[in-house]
Image (cartoon, rainbow, N blue to C red; front, top):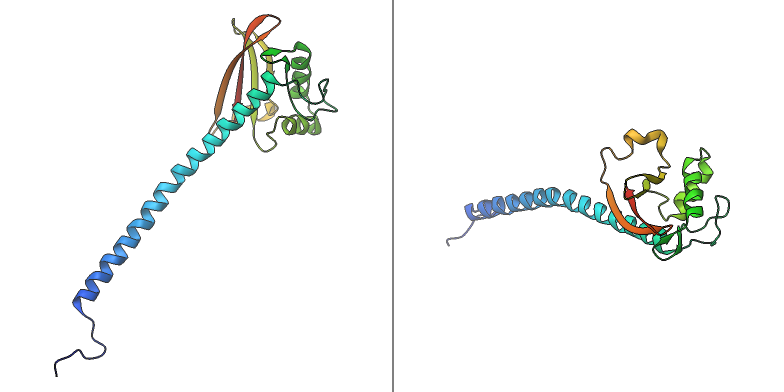
Length: 171
């Protein structure tokens, strides 16, 4: 009777096991190498969508309540009508951005829909004169966007019948 004795390992079994283990190691390495890049792309796409949403709110919406100020703001909006900004609301937003009161900054970020993100908003005329320079994180300006992805959205609207550029950065 010709047969295998128990406890013996076939050469083909060893070879197929080595190939299988090599393939598993390769697939794990490929997945680990692939997913961080995908995660970063997902993060930057998420930031762009948040920046675009904020730009839509600012240039098309009056905010809530319509006569908001730093004490009662629930939703940020700078428009008096779609694509026409209100100078009064821009002044109110600048006041909130310049505040050193953490509660006012928190209300600004919550009303913009970005409570967990960092944002910066500028409004400039075509001669690059700043109408609004909002950076609630002025104390940490040099580190604001270092080492992180930044989404930048620029929109063109009117203010006092003049064309202005609204630029929003979200990190």
